[in-house]
Image (tube, rainbow, N blue to C red):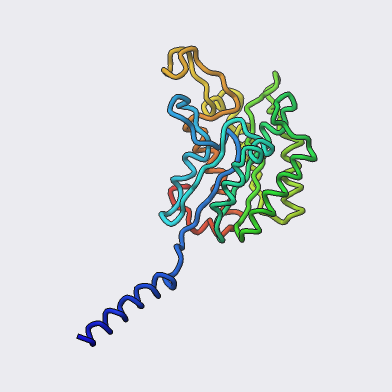
Length: 252
């Protein structure tokens, strides 16, 4: 009887000990932090899609994409609404934080706009905070708007704020995905008419969510979101980030 009790005690000790010594979850979480061009959309907005939606399906099972991007947010409002602090509460060593702002920061008529100095300061804070958790910040320039002039030349609508992102990337030595540059190249390649197929352009009556149609040159449809996601994935590989090892071949 004593022998059985000793065995039970040893078994209990082993279970408790193992609960503290088993290796931690090796999975990686990729947090997406940004605005409506990246965010998860509600059903009532379909076929509008943020590029973060298809992005999540291009990774192996050990990677979880947590899309925290929200419509209409700037760096200022993302901080003010405690959305960033919520990311920080969840962030673990080895995770990734992909940071894309600019669309709403740069429009000075919006209440959540930032000055150039504020935008820079906020980006640096995101980088420092993520690094304090031993996570991997990645800066992303704002994805291009479809705005062609009468001569068919694409306008660089994010020029100033995208350059701030590039400067912060250089100064803090954080990987940069220049999605503004890459998406502009895609739009120029497709031209003024074909590039409409990337954005939420709909004829009246074409979709029940948009009975009057849509001519949105900022937000993507499902096809456009996937093309933008693939540009980001290609840059992850080009930069040789550790995350690249977890991308599935179907992203090519």
